[in-house]
Length: 181
Image (cartoon, rainbow, N blue to C red):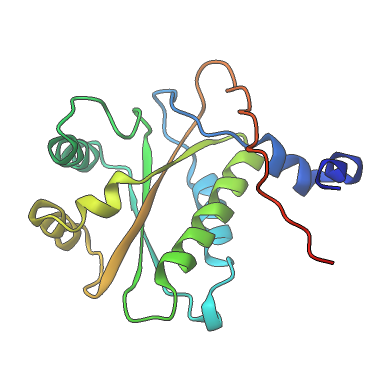
């Protein structure tokens, strides 16, 4: 039954099935219009009791991206670029005292990832940033870039024009769907 989805393909379903996480980007910024479209799609995500608890901090400044990169590298004890050279980072936080801040932010990220894919823009979900925001360096960064007090890190979405070959899809895990009719 689950495999039959390809028989009902429309543009939305096709976009969901063809979206990939990109880890290589061209060295040019996405357009303001593309960014605005992606952000609007995030703002229209569903949220618990329509609380819309999310907050998006868009980072395109190369010095701030370098600061985040260095902070995450230090935290993870690595020299690997956690943002894969992407020119745009969307730091997603959510109001901590709402019903479901992590879920609200996650839904917004998924909407933005699908919107980006539909526009030919690569994206990838980056987890380390939420943890980084709990460190002293991360708290200082949050204050510096205007992340509101009382918000918790959800994740980071990186965006840019994809470079290289489109990643092949990974096999889907088996045994992950039960039917109770």
